[in-house]
Image 1 (cartoon, rainbow, N blue to C red):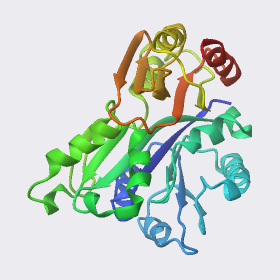
Image 2: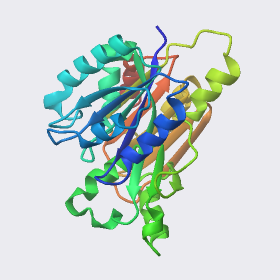
Image 3: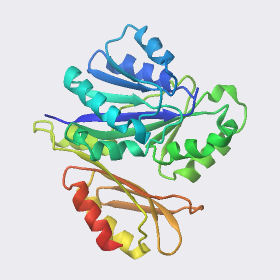
Image 4: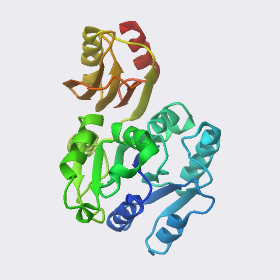
Length: 299
């Protein structure tokens, strides 16, 4: 069975996640079998009802009354998603995560369960509300966490503010120096679902071959590496991966953001040393066990 690409759409309440999801459905539903997961803390899913009224062809799994990223619901989420995949056989899966979700956990769920045989993490989008970005108050840390691991951050509702976009961009880059930032209104942007490196490999190099067994994996660790050990670790594994990204705590009492694409390794020192060590990799040439063992050897 070919693994299914799994895409995350995160963002704080009212940022425009459902609008973006509707644009994805409009673009892909006629040519691709789409599976949608909607997760809300409320017992009723208003957004799910709105999607159903679109008349487009997709399958919907609703998970309400809590976050799928909460430990108390992980088992139920894995079981529900596995049944959903077996029943509908989607070609892509998109989750609209609750505005309060910790999205870094989703890779861990996928790589550490039976879902790993069926799904890989393809992209992570975060929608930012330009008008209310500075008003999220106590939830600012959760929003920053969503931004931190996003591949692409969409600054939405730019028509509702006259100034302040530059400051928002600066804050986003401070949280995640490698993310791509796009500005828009009504989430009206050109987009392609999927990691560009993976898409290039699949579509440019192996069109006539069966797709490799892609794995998405995550390491969360309290271990610290020296700067030199980190470089050696990354140069060992980056040629074997479509992508490696995340944050690492160094023995020099610094935190760095890293991004690797094939032979390219980038390391940027962060201003604030508050990040836990979190690394995400997408590869078909090594496993989580091999990668985790190697990190321990370099620590």
